[in-house]
Amino acid sequence: MKKILLFTAFLAFSCRVENNSSNLVIQLQNYLEAKAAKDNSHWQYLADTVYTWFDKKTGAGNIQLKGVPASGIWTGWDQEMNAYIKYDSLIPDDETHSVSGIFYEFNDFYSLIGKGPTKTKRTYWFDEENLIKEILIDWDPSNTMTAVHLKPVVEWVLRNDSIEIQELYPNGEIIPSAENARKWKVLLDKYNKAADF
Image (cartoon, rainbow, N blue to C red; front, side, top):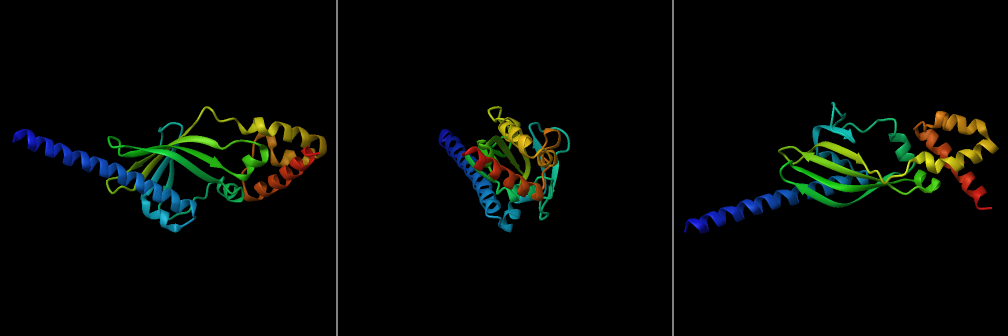
């Protein structure tokens, strides 16, 4: 009888853990789908304050307050470049109350310069109410650098209009803004049309 009770307790615990894992994955999927659809319902999946780190979870991290739209320097650029994310293999971890997965970022800029999507491993930690409270974004070493893909573009532009590239790409750096994203699109469209001849 004692063995049966222990087995029953183990089964109940296993089901509770499995259900919690499933709930976390579903929460994350719902959040990602709402955010991709630019639906304000994505806020309901976030804690009041969310901390994001890049590559290492050290320091204070970037702070996102619930209900306050992102306003970083890349926001306008990403909107203008139609950035979107796809993911696969979301894996829950009950010990850390988190879900990790492989994510791929696509955008018009990558397409125009012949670069594949940026691959990252992302981990989302949840609070006791199953709301996202922390995010870590790890860069995958297989990603190619944007500068490699931009090299032939820069060389072509320098032969044709060096002033424009100096404004858009000073010291080999992209200056992110919605306006610069529009200018890059025009420039890359000219380059791609010239390269077809």
